[in-house]
Amino acid sequence: MDSFLPKLSALYPLWLLAANFVSRLGGMIILLVIGHHFKPDQLADYFTTLATIGLVVTATQAGCGPLLIRLYQGHQFRTSTQIILLRLVIAGVGITTALTLTDIGFSPVLLMPIAAALAPDWIISGRGQLGKIALIAVLGQLAGIATALIAMITGNSFALFAIAPTISLASLLTAGILAFHPTASPPNNRLPLAKPEPIAINRYRAVNLIGFTLLAGALPNLDFVLLGEKLGQNEQANLILAQRVFLIAAAMIASLSAALFAKRQSGLLRDFWLMAPALAITAILFLSPDTIAHLIFDAPPTGLPDLLRVGAPWPFLLAILARQILISQEIDNRLFPGWICLIVLILSGVMLPVFGTAENTLIVMQMRFGFCLIFLAACHFVPQWRGQSA
Image 1 (cartoon, rainbow, N blue to C red):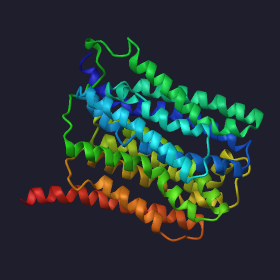
Image 2 (cartoon, rainbow, N blue to C red; image 1 turned 90 degrees about the vertical axis):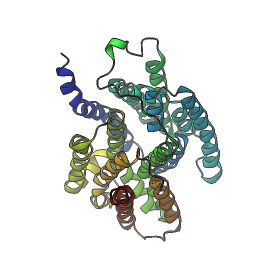
Image 3 (cartoon, rainbow, N blue to C red; image 1 turned 60 degrees about the vertical axis):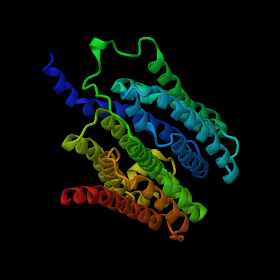
Image 4 (tube, one colour; image 1 turned 180 degrees about the vertical axis):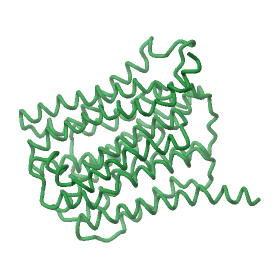
């Protein structure tokens, strides 16, 4: 039996991919339900709000998901508690900023940063209980599907804007039960496979983890918010509708990255589970964008299929970036490349000019992904090269 465990542990990404596909299928069902029963302009407003609040959620989590996992594995519970309190403070600041600087107004989506701040899923990931993480995702999606059906039947805009918050709150409740129930922690003689050894988190490693995780969380939304705001209303609506398709891939990549991080997976197995699903999605978007557009939306706007084809490399580029982040984020690099890259993206996104069309804007987004990849790889290899030269 003991000899069988390493083999079973090596196969966990295949099981995780299947479980992740089930949870992503819930997101697809929600998209199909609302995509065929709400007008494109209503959907664009909803998705724009989600993209904006997604940045607030990223800031709320303070980039500390992986850091919390490592702290839990290192039994540094006091520091973990302090970080949760910090997340709540940032959630309040983020919500206030969103209300002040945007036209979101009071909406159910404002609950999402609070749910993100309190979510204890990092405890479950730290134990290596990936099945429970998948269960949280599935139950959250089921709650979202129920809300989407209510929105479809009633045609109520409030119910439409309540879909994503319902998923967040249902996931928070489920994660709380699974993390803190008396039977949640496995007995000492039945620890999760490949139980990680505690790792000491020094200051530089902690700063790098936070910066890289903020960067990874911001990448799927940041450019769509900063650059999309420079377009006309119709072009921006098309760009946001395209983003919802891309975010299916982004959610899968994020889930796989979190699991690979928790298991400390490296080498070809890590690369395969990050690249293969993203490459498959890229191929589908390039070969059949019209089919995808009509599958998801009842009456997709003119030009959306062409936009999906232009953006087909986006999922694969994001997967390559996720790989580089996994490699670089725990190295004691005093350059803090994650932070630098994030700051450069924000400042340049504000200062870049209007690109005229959604297609041109999406091309620029992918070029910015390429810049991030080159920059992070250079920051990773230059210190190592200097160390070897010395």
